[in-house]
Image 1 (tube, rainbow, N blue to C red):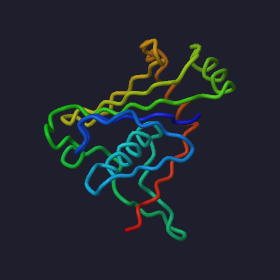
Image 2: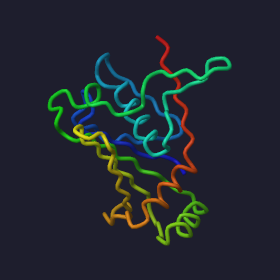
Image 3: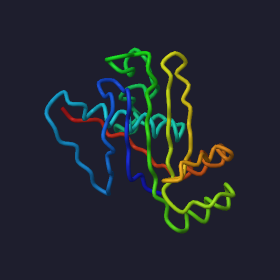
Length: 165
């Protein structure tokens, strides 16, 4: 399973990003203070929510260090322009044929296209709402949300590497 696209809405300085297509190697380039770090933090937070792990831990020698908290904090992460709006992350995953067969067995749902995950966080309660969809169809897959969550969590490998400045 590979993440192939990511989009973020109402997160820190980002009101709405373009869809960011992710390939094996991706580079974010731009002037200072344009939101590159915010995009990466949004991606790490959303993947951390899906995996139930802290993406901001990294290994230094024999010890784990925390770069920062992965939890969504309204004081830090709500949009600058209007901090009462929901923050939304949209991830698209491409599954291999073998993974699609396993997905069908575990969720009783045939997935012909990409798996879309939308995460919404209301700053007033900070509890993420996760919606699973099929690409193009717009059909919600939340009947099997626990099974889909487990399916994704079992396949995610996330490691945060802090920036060197």
